Picture 1 (cartoon, helix red, strand yellow):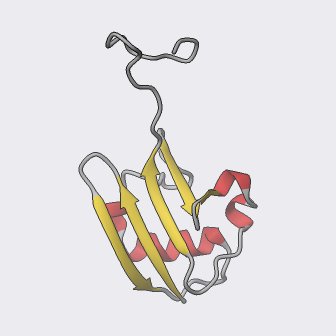
Picture 2 (cartoon, one colour):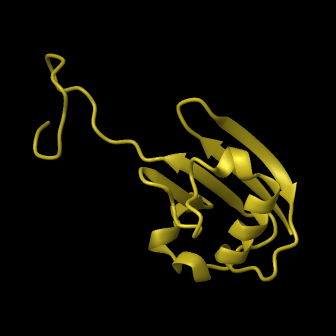
Length: 103
């Protein structure tokens, strides 16, 4: 199976096509195979149980795994997996920080 892997963070940007041989096309098995090959770059995004690290998200073809079938999602040859930090907030007019109830 060949997939495109993207990692985006404050200090990490990686986009590359990788070849994997997961036990099955389920996301859980694909994540296991990815971590075996790319432990260091993925360490900030994946916990030991393959769940997203705090403040991170796993996207499959641009869709959050949580809005799909989670770890049972089937990954196909050529799919794009993105590991990223979640982004929220910003500055309101006047430079004040936005929060969950403001802006």
